Image (cartoon, rainbow, N blue to C red; front, top):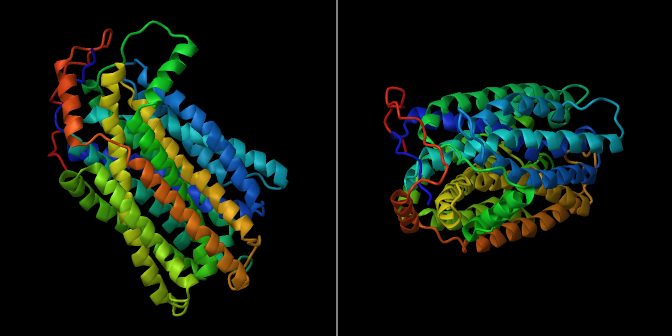
Length: 501
């Protein structure tokens, strides 16, 4: 019978900070891929949007296949550094290198050659970041079994994820994408994207190592993987299928795919809307990126409190609906002729900032809840299968986030293609009919994705009472046969800082 890991000392602020800092890498990579890859390769490098989107979609399919395999490998790894940390350390350098390569393609490639470059580099980059992200996220249920502490952990993780994304946007619009005589529209200056690759690679490398080192002392409190004889590939696949067929997990997966695809479309289209619909300057675009830190700060404060008072699922559902309604309102009002004019720009930016901040806070809090819900699935599955499958389940979280740079960018590319949006366009020169068509296609597609996702989420059933019952049953059970006990706890090395929520 299965048993949970031995009781560890409370998680303090130090551990939460390092655990969260590791999400800078994922945040920077996700935002860069979802918001800036399409406009970089399409409008700057001149590659057709459909080719860029297709390359990213194919790499996403490969990513979807590799994710659960990497999770399964992590779940079954036995080493002196536990199941997770060997992969976390190993991922730092390749993840950084592939991020640099994504924004520094060789000069002179044809469109066909550029398609293969985007496909191969994005595919290898996804595998590299997953080698870190899957094991690090899988630490969540191993760090604590407490229903509310898990929400707190994910709150810090998503706070720093937003900060990573904010850093990328701020860096681009305030420092890197400067107008020049050759490129009067800063967003179309290729040199800024090339330098982004260098700086982003350094940020990713440092944040991954910081999370790995900062959580290293918690290895002693987690159990090693059970000692099992070698299994055939077929046996591994059967176990994987059994794990992934968990009903609660499938509900979260379906919601996440829909939600992250919609969020990816929003991120990719936001640059187009800001540049061609609202006709904002690079400085104003840079100011709008700060909505992320406001949203993340609000979520950092309210997410643990809402979870404790109302439970994770109700908060996730309600705030998902609130968030999508807020995000679509400015475009819907503009389509009806009821929104602010583009001049004066300062007033427009303030209003757009407020909408984006409240949208971000609502969806970030909803996202935090669903991520913490994945952690609660781990014990429910452990009781049913006798296997600790945290790595496999958190492969879903990484896959869902990958949708922002795969399905989301694909959706954005298709919307641009169907609307007949021209390549190499300049602000103020795109026909009004094209802008109107673009918005008319985007609005219903985005709304449909969100509401279909919310429908799937209603099938999730693990609430606080069910989770605590699962923990009680696990505490009363014996250890998994062959499972290795963690090292004897050494409280002189434990994180003694007061728990932070």
